[in-house]
Image (tube, rainbow, N blue to C red; front, side, top):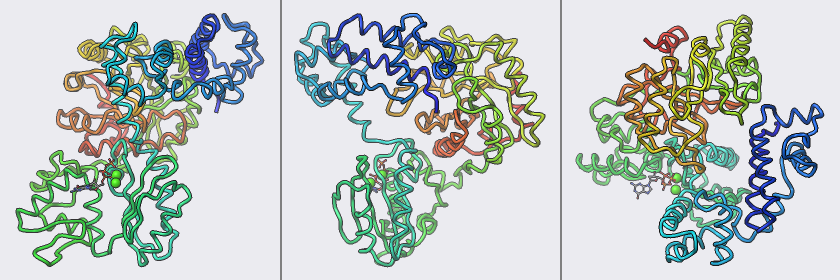
Length: 573
Ligand code: DGT
Ligand code: CA
Ligand code: CA
């Protein structure tokens, strides 16, 4: 995979940052910073320039030394000087410098004066009020640091659902190899398809519990065995992920699955229904007095308390128990309802495959359509398209469509929403497209009122179709920007616009709760993968998971419709 300009720029600015903490020569630091900016704003991929034999030292502000370093990044994906300095710095100084409130200058001061070298030390000093004493810090910054350290220590423990799959599925495969294994399933938040997962809760039925327990703790990724009994064990993997295992008898499998799938709040609501009926419910079954009246399947368990089966994604006590009592549960969308993908990239911007390859991959998935939405010009780091390049792409898609049968490539663009709410491409270009996905990529820090107004102003443009990744959050990396989502949804509904559920596992934006809000307000959403490579099309399942958690049914989702119906919906009156 070729190295992107943005990745090169990132490494060079990072090097500047670390050199600053080391107290290196300011001129040298500035040189790396400038080089990073130069690379970031280049219209061409450095990787291809090098491949074509270009001499990078001819670029402004880039001398021989920097040219060599850039070449190293392109060739190896690494910058050895960066790795070296990073490992020389004491403790977590390199990490601390990434905290926006701090930056390298302040990290250096905190280390030099207070000896702070990690997150723990930072939090401790902030709590003790030692940071406000320092020149140039003050109570406001100290409070910010405190909030930031709390946020970081809390969030570091939860992993993305996609990462949980990477660890979880091989564990299930491994368990299946043990003698006497029957069912094995991961319950908990994983089964509820939450966007992040605290730990894995594995449930098995088998003929030889002891064999399974031994087999489980012998898994080669296990670092620590926290506990191991006859029917339950807890281990920590090398990655830090905790895995709980429970062996349950077959006649209790449904009850155990129901119990350990949670959520806790859902279980409590279900239990109180049982109590009203004079029943007892626990992980072994539903009991009337001493008699077990259900337990083998989840369906039986729910039936005994007077409920229809409730899909795991709904089990958050967000009204599903009430709905279950009144036969008002939604018929949730499934991955099989999805007929196409409305937001993918090609090589023309920051994707890695041609339009044709992306289309072939989508067709192979059984889709009817695929919308190519490359970035617009403002997003220079992604090599965004200007009007001329977009015009050429439109022609290319027209040509390609003649080669496809029963499959349509839709013409789209991921249009940047500029700070004043205008769109980054002229309307005489946008009118030639089937749809636009419009997104914010800059100025995340506006006030809630300003950010909301900016987005709504963008929706005023008649060529605005779908608001892409509406909050901009990146799980464990970036907080959402401030917006009034209710106001945005109301505006979208009024104007005939849609919101995206971006299915990238790091985004999952809209979130589950926002999906539910969309449902309640009657706004339709598009579940889109934002794929940059053919394999990314598989992210769809993560988006569908969030949509299901938000109670969405097929008709709530734009890309469950056939092409003709979809096209009608995309036309704004
Ligand atoms: P996580 O791991 O933080 O992402 O979230 P969960 O939901 O997987 O929670 P976890 O692993 O602590 O527990 C798994 C399930 O076990 C949970 O969803 C419901 C059930 N559970 C755990 N503790 C209790 C409890 O005290 N009462 C009830 N009713 N259920 C519980
Ligand atoms: Ca769990
Ligand atoms: Ca657990």
